[in-house]
Image 1 (cartoon, rainbow over the protein chains, first blue to last red):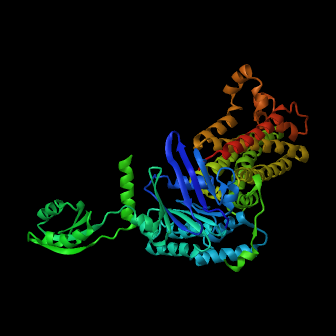
Image 2: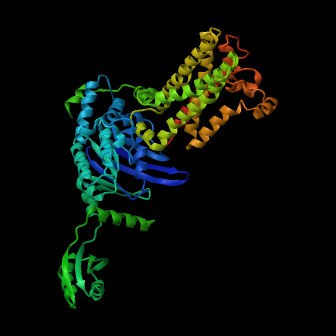
Image 3: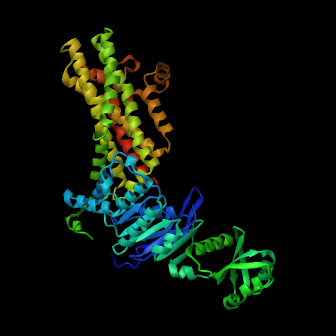
Length: 320
Length: 267
């Protein structure tokens, strides 16, 4: 790995198509040997960013470096060291999985077949396609294609693996396998991947980058994002005459916001508070105070990445 | 990493050739290791040699049968070339495989040149050499040794030049347009408009030089002067080489424009 501090570093990287800003000036940093989740709603600019890094599209403004090489002028060298899985990965249908990997490997390696064939066999084993290696791709399921996509992306031992929605079309077992493969690869490579599955990001990623409407809205270690600006909150699930209770809770000066969800005759409130100690002591007595209400569940709310993501995206939407 | 790393030798291809060998091998395999080659050969034999067989069976003379073969080739070969060439670029762009392979160490000129070389060779065998050889044997079988092999091969050379014109034109148009309609429409209109009587007369009146700078005269009996391929096939001297030189220059120009445009393409 190079002595450069970041594997990916962009400064003011922007892209517009026919006057429409697909990516607003982006300052992005991805550290070596990290797994970085690239998050954002559809149309946020994730795929555009990836295409700019790979030279598949040209920036309208700003600069970008991968391994310290300029994405505009030194893209050949970048592509020699990167493995890429596209969002909707397509292959040549007349090839088998083994032929596909051989075709990709031959872009990176030359000389005798022995090393390449050994590498292909190893890669097929890694993604669980060894028994289907010589079947034409026409008969492959979505999950098998996605595994092959990951296999072709890392057949060259890339220093950087860029995966655009790697678990999108997989069932829970397939998703688990993909995350496992990513975890195994982290000691050899940096992984930069876009996804909508926030639970996966929280499980395997070190850092996350959040885009919304073409602009960067948050970037940093997962722990920092989880801690970022989140007010304390409690979850209270009750049954019975809930209208009066809700009004009473809303009247408390330390209650800042209440979100309501109803299910099977019970109501769950997510209550954001400014003073968690007072809230912890008084929420249940307040709910039970008027009678006619049963408290089914009460506890401190634990924020997950999905909550953080939704809040950040909502905040950034309001700011615009 | 595993032990196999030691056996792997990194590719040393650089510059415009980066990835060319591998991508060309894949394009050749797509021609010769799939059913494409025999399908193309079969269609070419049925259309070109089948037409000639019907002519011969109908009692056509030597000259008429030979001209019918050249005319059929002049009209059909461009369609075959255009159909394959536009799919080679637009098909890959639309399906996403072009973006995929270009994310690997493959330069864009190498992508275009591999397509050109593989299709150029495949079409040469399927649409020129094979039907040309069969046509030669058909004519020999009916009329004896009135036809010289080198002359006929020269005629087939012009057939191939005509094919290359439409192949390179379609490759260029496929880099300029995003849909198949304009590519097919422009190429087929150009290939078939030359021999049509209602176009020839106004063209000869207002733009008489046009027939000399386009490939129409190579294969088709344009304005009753006889196709240039016919002169060669009969062992006669060519009345002009201007359309040949012009067609070569067009091919070079189309390739240059295709390379320039594809370099700027965004995926």
